[in-house]
Image: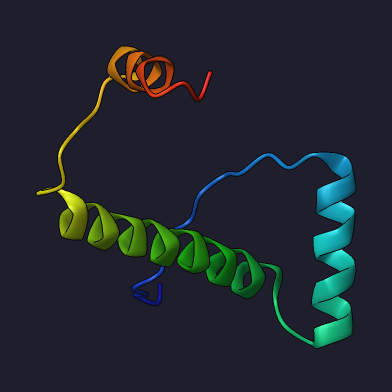
Length: 78
């Protein structure tokens, strides 16, 4: 048995998404797994960017919805 660093998982796809991925794999000459791995990496990279943005903004003041609405009313905006 060959050792590998990859892990196996069972994933259930919507039939239309499965078909689209299968066709894309054929068209791009890439494996289904490569396409799924790349998609997951993209989503996780977006999450990492979001976390960085949150950290940059953590010193900003928080405003409650109620205080914002009251301020709008006080300034005659609503």
